Length: 322
Image (cartoon, rainbow, N blue to C red; front, top):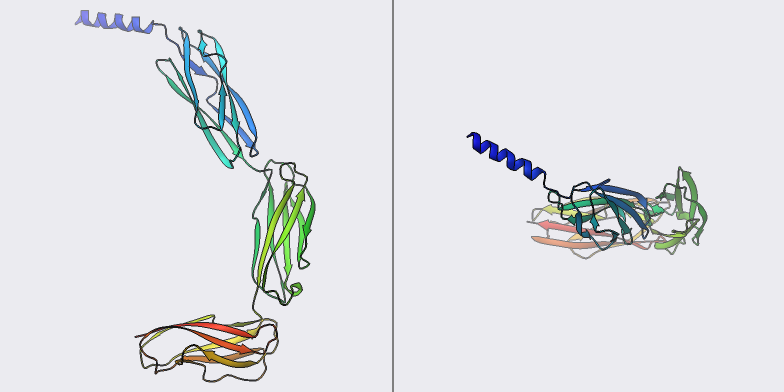
């Protein structure tokens, strides 16, 4: 037993003394921080051979085509140093980016080493949205929204001009730190009466070389002058029973109007009566008569009005009779 132990110990000592290269990096990861899209940045990863035998670097392989590498020396003597220079192209990228490079050598312990680098690719100016949408805009009030122009490079956003051809849209500029707020307002009273929906363009000019101008769209559609309490009526019931829903019509501007006529696509859907006087609000019942047969119904009620801005209004009706 003593002879076996002595042989093993002697073998271990000989193995430890065998000359071998050891690849060593001063830094394994680099963060480029914030950079703009399309910018090319570079960095040098320093390499040292800390072993007792020459180190042969066999391959330096980037993970993607966005990275180019340069290595001036592929063979390092003990204690000798060199560096891998990387060039990263951020074209077509946005957000947090993480990339890697695999270095292959004849180091017996670490034949493959992965170097990594990252960057936050941001635009110099980053709008919170490109389209401002105003749904069901009243002709008697104004509505507003805000677009934030965020500074991507930690320098103040500077606006030189805001151009807008629509007289009913205004834009006020407000500074908040390095960002700028575009406070948009649209006045329903100034929109032409014959226009029910539209899309306007807002141009914002800046001092930025990268983003000299920005284009925003303002989309809007008008709320009908006269609206119904029920845009759709849904019924479910038994054959032989009458179904009934009370509906009210009101003018958004408080103006008086008349109901001229009411028609239905089905003889089973009726409006028994309605007031013919002029008022800012009308109420009436919509019914499905007891004579209706079993089945599914998809009908439409059309209400004729004397309002010069809105001549009619439609209500959809869906019913299931069992």
